[in-house]
Structures are given as C-alpha cells and as structure tokens.
Length: 332
Image (cartoon, rainbow, N blue to C red):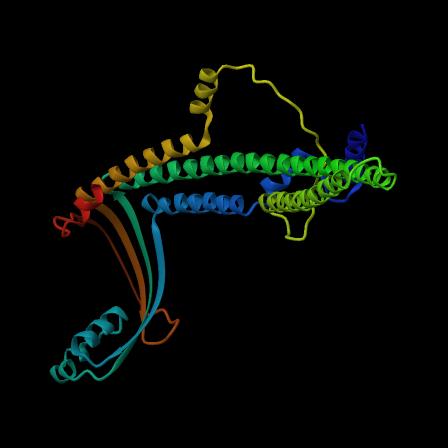
C-alpha cells in the first residue's frame, strides 16, 4: 500500500514538472526534432529537386552571352567586318586582306535549344524521378513510424525504470525498518547476532540495488532524450502509466496488413520502378536524338553598340554510334 502511495506521489510530482509529458507528446516532439527524420525530410527535398531537373528534357534551354575578341588573323578580321556590317570595297584590297591589322569584335548572343526527340529518355527520366520522390516519401514515413516506436519503447522503458526504483526504495525502507527492530531485539538478547547481521546485509544489498536502479533511470532518460531529439541536459518525465492491451486479431491478419501497409515495402517497390525507368532512359541513348536550335547575335567593334545583326536557325540530328561501351553498360 505504501508503495502504491509513493508511486502516486512520484507521478503527481512528475505531472507538475515542466518536463512532464505524455506518450503522445513525446512522439510528437520526436517526429518534429529527431535528427534522422530531419535527414529523411532533406532526402525528400533532394528527390523533388532531382525531379525538377528532369524538366530540362522537355523545356528549351536559353543562354545569353557577351563575348570579346581581338585578333589580327586575316580570316577573323574578314569575318568580324562582315558580322559588324562594316565591310566596304576597300576591304577587298589584297594588301589589306593579307595584313588586316588587329580588329576588335564584341558579340552579344542569344542561343535557344529545344529538345524534340531523344528516344524517350526524357519521359523515362521524369518518371524515374517521380518514383524516386515517392520512394523518399515512403522512406520518410517508415522512419517516422520507427521513431514513434523507438520513442514508445524508450518512454515505457523509463516508466519501468521508475517503477523498479520505487520498488527497490520501498523494499529498502522495509529492510531498514526490519534492521531497526532486529537491533532492538538483539539489545534485549532475544535474537542472535547472526539475525542482526543478516538484516544489515539485506539493507546493504538493497542500497546497492537502489544505486543500480537510479542508474537505469538515468540511462532510460538519456535514451528518451536522444530519440526525441532534445538537448543533452533535458529531463523528460513520463506521466502515463502502463496499461495492458489485448490483441484481438490473429497473426495471419496482422501479417497481411503489414505487407500491404508497411512504408518501407512501398519505398522498395518505388525504388524498383525507378530502376526500370532508369534502364528505359538509358536505352533511349541508343536512338538518334533530334534538337532544334536558334541563335541571334549582335556584333560591333564597341561594347553595347548595335552594328551587325545575324540569326541562325536549324535542327540537328545526332546518333551516338559508339561510346566505348558506356551506353550499353548504362542499360545493363
């Protein structure tokens, strides 16, 4: 009865503590602050960023550049004057053609390239990245479930440690009471010295057990602090008590539900699908690629001056016939 009262007092003191928390509070804090979950969330963001990169296989790439060139090469000088639209009849002079002197050209260029067809690689890589995002999300869900489980395990571990400590303290108080009675009886010479010594030995044993139990409470508190992602000096105090739950479902039903709902299995399935999409994307490199392009340029002998204008448009079909085994190896 005294043990029950003592444990009730401990629970009340813990409930009044600023670090007192229920199991649900502990789980919520762990899901928010656990370091491994923070890493898993960053993995999801990285997968989403990877999916964003796959848009390059569908959207045009646009590049703006500003170049400066100075040359006395005859071919370059001839071309620079043509680009700058400053070519005159005097430039056909043989001496000037052979010795043009140094000439400067500033070129502002806008280049646009639009993928048209690449053997389905872009679509496959997009789908691969999408499966990668789903796998990362499922892995995060699995990690959250695992953290919740580890939090509950550490939480109840600390509750058990507290109960064990209280039981040892109750036993120690009883042993000390017995030792005091034995001391009185020995003085009255109604019991032998061996009984008194036995009572004292029992007190010493329980004092040692109390030290061990206190150490277990501290260890359990550190485990709960770690899984919750709290500072090392935090002192979480569980307030829930142990409750016995009975399982109403048979093992076969539980196994079936686990196979259908476990997020780590979902993550593995998405990873397998991503791998198949990746092989399809690699096979696309065996097929000719078609890209359209457009370039517009401004050429002048002075910076930011509009002198010569030009544009070029076209399409380019490329077929990687031999890559030293790189493409075939990528497919495999």
